[in-house]
Image (cartoon, rainbow, N blue to C red; front, side, top):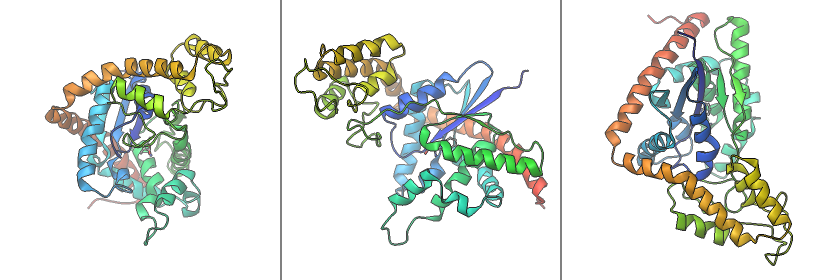
Length: 336
Ligand code: TRP
């Protein structure tokens, strides 16, 4: 059998996915399925613990995100779908990696700075897991010997760190890790206010379970377009001044003609913002309609979803255990 290429990525289980995760990340994961690729898509529940302290939220969210994955088209027959915590060897691997990782380089990572900001003002400051977050992430990637890691822009420095660690280890122990390629092909979908889309329950988010009416209402009342435009016939600037409507048109239309047409009509003052928002809401609903149907069916299939995670966890564990056995031996640790 031809060697499969491992494509790996994960999402933290901070809540239901929003439209941005769906279009930007999960649909991309789905597009990598098939051919010679072996997808490994996981839910980073340990990483979620750095900020989520409610055990019930952790418990529920993992199933919710797994259902979102499955409804979006991740197929357990083609991809390994699992929870990070189902592979305890990752923790062990992260220790070996941490032992080669300079602390100084770690705290300079922007994602970490963001996480640290969230705990700013907290009495005890950031927790230690936040600092070691990128190292565990490197274990997630290097443990299964991933060849390709699709991520969004914000995760680039973390994947760079994983690549660095792989090279460092390979210098000492040739061939011990695959140095993963990173693909930064995920589109960023702005939230309703034009800023980064927050969790699915955040005010600026479009949830993937929102109804067409809700999506319409959200864009109609909160979508931020070119503020200099007063009348629908004023020429607009979709590229620079429209903050949350045109950029989404651009991100979701598979053919360029469709969003070009919208942009040209906006520039010409031939389409008003209200109409443009309506068209966008229709398109979003079209994209998420089939997802919502599948998601609805999965709603009451917790046993099935648990099975998927169980099987996925077992498979991932075998792969990571193989790597960890090599690393353990290489660094001089013996299991007595
Ligand atoms: N840090 C990623 C995020 O917040 C999630 C993640 C954890 C991840 N481990 C990973 C992504 C490994 C890609 C590869 O979105």
